[in-house]
Length: 496
Image 1 (tube, rainbow, N blue to C red):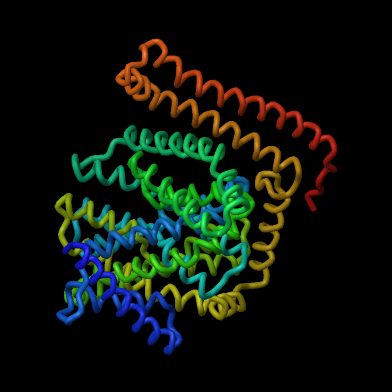
Image 2 (spheres, helix red, strand yellow; image 1 turned 30 degrees about the vertical axis):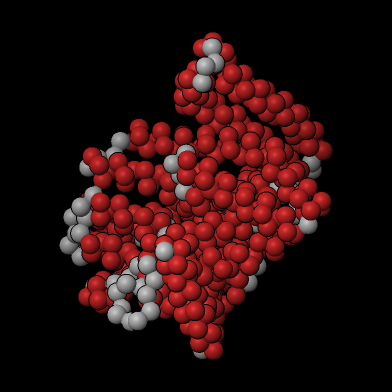
């Protein structure tokens, strides 16, 4: 019986979403608009004869998050991330801080208490990888824009883990310890390093073998297994399934056949992504949203303009062009799926339902506006660019060129690239040491519980950690020697 009900829900969602999406296409609107409208129709708040259970649809929607984050990860490699994240990290941190301040200020204007304002501020500070990915499917962007945008989104997803942990503690105790936040960050860094190192040993080779020996059919199964396997692993550690799926995608990207894998997985990704957006539309109570329409519009405007201004400024300071930075800011002008989780934590902590309604309604409004802003991004950039003084254009151009020449970016010279490799090796060594310190006692206890003698249980994790660290130290020493040779061969740079 439950299987029949599940099938009815799926059929209802797909039929309505398909019909609405065709109409949206005919009106030259993004498919996302059609999916969101379909969510209104099949959701629990509008009394129509078509209805799907939100919990069952939400379960299917989680597959869409995994597939989309996996596909985003496939576009990257660890070397590209190492080059990209210093720039994107500045933009992401500045953007989140700006949006949090705006959300907190608007919460004060609406009369919320200090704790409630914290949930509202954090809820609007993180953008949506799902929405941006789908918009970029229909409106492709250049590599510089994509790298900045998805770099920001990756940093946001990592920061969201810390934010969720801190808010959960705040909901339980009414206070947040900086020591607890620091421990969460150390544990997260250690988990990412350990999982990435372990995955590098077998995932790229597994993907290459599957494609070359068994063809696309095997890649569908193996690629999906990697996506959901790493998502489940991340969830087991207490982190986001989206972050785990992204890491699995990065490891697949290291195989050298990431484009082929992404092409094969794309139909599954599009199918479940559509269900995800339908589930977002089902979250909104129209009556509650209409009752808070002025506040929703104010918050939506703050998100759009706040993202545009903060990402543009931080992007320029990070060495990106005015155009790249503005298009990235327009692309990120929405509230992401982490906002729903933050709103739910707020409800559990006793925050009024209005906080949940504001965050979810703002997410819906900005999901509608993002495709339009991306579509109009070029005219908007041209309109702003023509009003920027020539002197400011020159300053931005000189700053971009100066950062491009700086070895700090790691993109300019052989010496810069080697320096980044040494830095990465150092971070990996630190991460493994931290992971061993944090989880070593737990591993020893588990091994001892399985019947392993205590002294052997103590030796095993220490030996494995030291073995991996030794390999990284050797690599760092060799890279240091190569850096010395590269600096001797590299001609001096002129400051002019």
